[in-house]
Amino acid sequence: MSYLVFIVSVGLLALLGAGGPLHRDTWLEALDRRIDAIEVGVWVSLSMRIFAPLFMAGIALTVTQLFLGDLAQALIGVLLLYFSWGRGDYPTELQRFLARARVGDSVGAGAFLDLSNSEPTATAAWETEALAHFTYRGYARWFPPVLYFCLLGPFAAAAYRLVVLANARSGGRFDDAQNLLEWLPSRLVILTFAVLGDFDSTRRLVTANEVDGEVSVKALLAEGVERAWHLDESELQGVDKTIAAVETAAKAINRSCAVWVILISLAALL
Image (cartoon, rainbow, N blue to C red; front, side, top):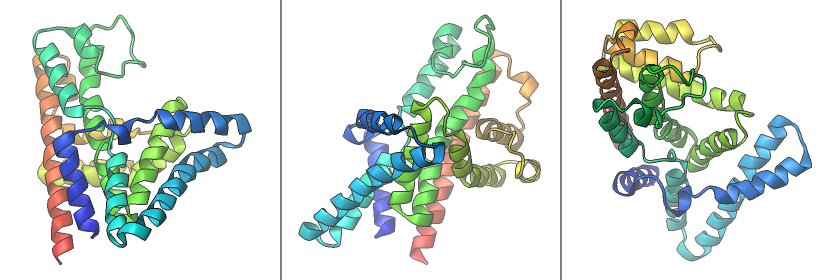
């Protein structure tokens, strides 16, 4: 049943992409305002933002089971896993970025990136950020939900996405919780890069940073791509080389997705 839920949800993501009613998160803003009005601690506040929606999902599961029986578990599981996928149209944004970059439109290309920590007058800022941005976007939309779904079920996958959404809406207030949840999936993705690319170099990256809290997940994943496919960071200043690096990252993410799907399928057959 869990494998069927996984395949159906992944298929829906491939066919429909992100978006739709399940990805309209405006209803969470009303919940945020109510919780903020209580003025509780960080961890209590985060727990309320997670457990309130999951409690409603549990009620929906219980009610649906009265009519559909065991089929309700699969239906709610598909909906929860689909909810847990990352927001935004990553493939389209990636192609639009590459199209703008190829014609030298640095302003248009930079609009797709998070340049909040870069100097606004730095003309090459979008070039140095591109690899890290699209590697992380590709990772965050798919891999952590899949891992937590496989380990703990659809409610855990949805809980991860609720933490990410709450952290984004609060301006990073729950960074510690998100970093904690992303520790394991990010390392497993790095190991997947190692299998697909230069194993020795990339494996050492995971070992060297496994207890280093100062290294962000975005930076770690970008360095994983650089090491696995021998991208020289000093060469990422030219437009053509930056485009090649981003395309390499996109291929790495797609191939890693394929590896994970194959492994999950094999595990389901055993």
